[in-house]
Length: 149
Image (cartoon, rainbow, N blue to C red; front, side, top):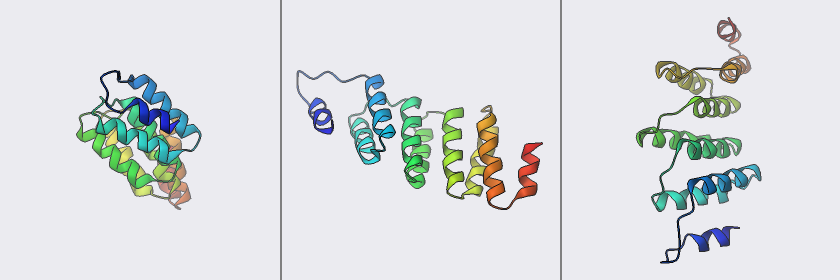
C-alpha cells in the first residue's frame, strides 16, 4: 500500500491530487490496523505537499497517535492545528483528554477541559467520563465527585 501511495503522489504531469476524503480514509484504515508509523508517514507527505488539512484529518491523526501512546506528538500536533487557524471541536478535545488521561496526565486533562469550557465547546458524557476517571485514578476522589455533580 505504501508503495502505491508513494507512486501516486510523486510529481508528474499526469497525476491528479487525491481528495482529502480518500486521504482521510487511508489514514483511518492505517490507524485501525495499528500501522501508526505508516499513517504518520502519509500525514507528513500530505503536509509536505501543502494539501488543505481539515479538522477530520487532524482528529483522525490525534486518535492514531493517542492509541499508540504518542501523546507528546499528539499534543504538539494539537497546538499546530490551532496555530493553523483550525479550531478544535468536541471530538478533538475528547480525543486529547481521553488519551492524556490514560497516561495519568490529570493536569493536562484539566487544562484541556478548562480550555474547552473557555472556548465554548460543548462537553458531553465522554468528556466528563474521561475527566472523572482521570481524577479518580489519580486519587482525587473529592474533585472527581465535584465533576459528577
